[in-house]
Structure formats: C-alpha cells, structure tokens
Length: 45
Image 1 (cartoon, one colour):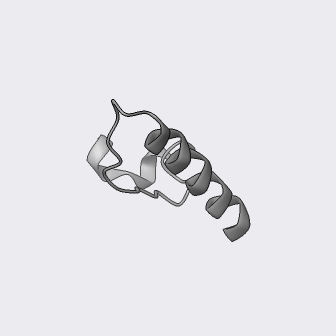
Image 2: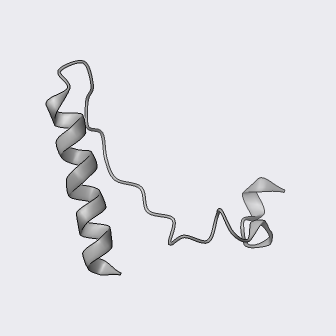
C-alpha cells in the first residue's frame, strides 16, 4: 500500500510541477474510507 501511495504522490507532484500555470499546495490523504462509507464521515451528514 505504501508503495502505491508513494507512486501516486510522485506521479501527481510531477504532473503539477510540470505545468507552469499550476501550483502544488499540499497533499491530502483520507485513508480511502470517504468514498466507501459515508457513515464514517460525520461532516457529510
């Protein structure tokens, strides 16, 4: 899982940094639960 995470971060960081009109701000990780179980996301309710 960590290897997949690192690969995704590297891919998107490179893509963002290659575009002079974009600015890399930060990385957000939600542990993969927000798209599966909305009952664990009280801010959605």
